[in-house]
Image (cartoon, rainbow, N blue to C red):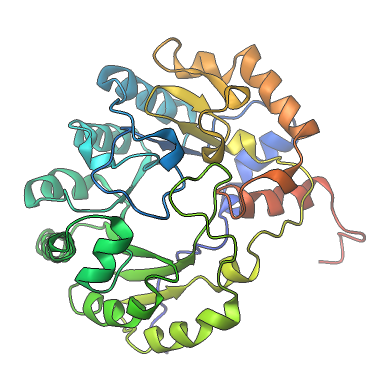
Length: 358
């Protein structure tokens, strides 16, 4: 029998693997979010042309360490299953990120990081990787010149990132750490020609996968406002060439469903809010990442209240009710983080006919 490769299901959702939380939600109980995304800092060392959060201005601010650690402990006790450090800035710029990762893991919360990995020194890798479920590097050019153009940095940064990923893979193997090391590539007119060369290089350095995804336009985005995007038929030849470099140790994840379903929704309202939370670098807790900066989508602030107080508070209840009953999802950013989960819970609330004929 052929080896079964890990499935990361990057285009889908995993809510159906949490039946207890779903059952409680269907009963109308106030459940803790299964997934929480943190923006540890507002600033960033890169200026990627496709950045969905450039409109926030890369502010020099960061989450308070003591408050964040308490939030992570509360989430673990409350039933949160995972947290992601990503968001508006570069997470590795927060000096206490390893402490956040360790605290979350010790309290039963799986930890992921999205990073450009330019700051992933050997010392930081050793402090972080043992506590992570995954680290996904945002690497959006297959050569020095393309990388520099898209990330708006010096070409030498491309070499540095590959060096850092190579060292991280070596440390993982040496210590037997379970962390998954992935790379994500946003396909743009400026970089699509470099996908295949990058795939060839990544297959040789020890990372676990390369994921190829579409550009997603935020309504308030400043730097790049590409209204077109690639259709699946345009990127399919590139996918097929890249997939030739896949091995039993290295996957090429062509996110075909994300291209195929881009901007389409099968649900009328956003019903998955109880399963998610998003914490910005100023401490505000939001409904969803695409609404950072919008006061109508703020539940509260972790610098002013504990997370349990925010989650059980009257303001959050009012915000959720307003969004579930009045927000037109057609006006939302396409391919948002809760999109796949929304497709699922919408059908639970609006089942098809004859559901017993499974």
